[in-house]
Length: 328
Ligand code: GLY
Image (tube, rainbow, N blue to C red; front, side, top):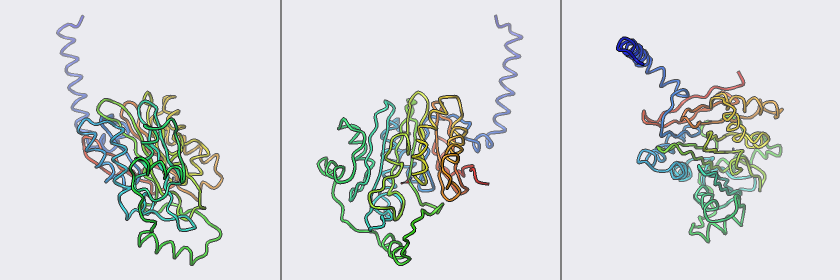
């Protein structure tokens, strides 16, 4: 039984803990991987800030995480100045912009499209694959046909001025020996994972893939478990960077499974990067970053190289964070 004396002791202890936390508030927010919040959305790179704003409109109005992760990355797909997502992306070596995307919800439902041309919002086509078909992944001309049959518009086959200039410069260099570039600011996939007010998780991922790739190449982004994965009982993860290296380790699935074993989101991302290092002898030449949130709403990130950042939006605002990294 709680006596009055014990109650007073307990009150004093709680009071002092509260005062301690209050004085450390700034530190706790900065180390936000340890702070559980709901709703929360995180996404890759600086372009994640605008995408998070789109997602936050839905999450803050008690909307579903699934709607948030679709609408969020659509902001990036709409941005024709973005050279690595959507129709403004850099083309393959034959001059075609080909898009990959995936989406997954709290029920484990998922959809993806790959090698899709001339459609503005591949993530929405991926959602339609998930919701309207018995399939998970549709590619190429079949994906385009499916999109057109479901109300999407065929956009002109045309590079943006910036993408065309970059492509012509690349052609001039006549790079027979193609190598992906490593870590250019704003260069890659947008991956996004979110938890809504009900505690449900969803994820999305969309990209134009590696610049000047071989025609037909598909990366990690549309592959469930590689570019993105959600298990509503455990957490959600997504990846950015050179997809081949992520595919070799089923990267996002691995991060979620490591969280299932009890690792924090950041430690799970770190362990996945260590696995990637072990399985990819070329790891020093490429960049990869993982992002994750767990069922408690804690988040974390870890990258191969310096320079990876990610955007986090919760009820304290929408901010960019630098990720820790492996190659010191
Ligand atoms: N992570 C995007 C890609 O490799 O295509």
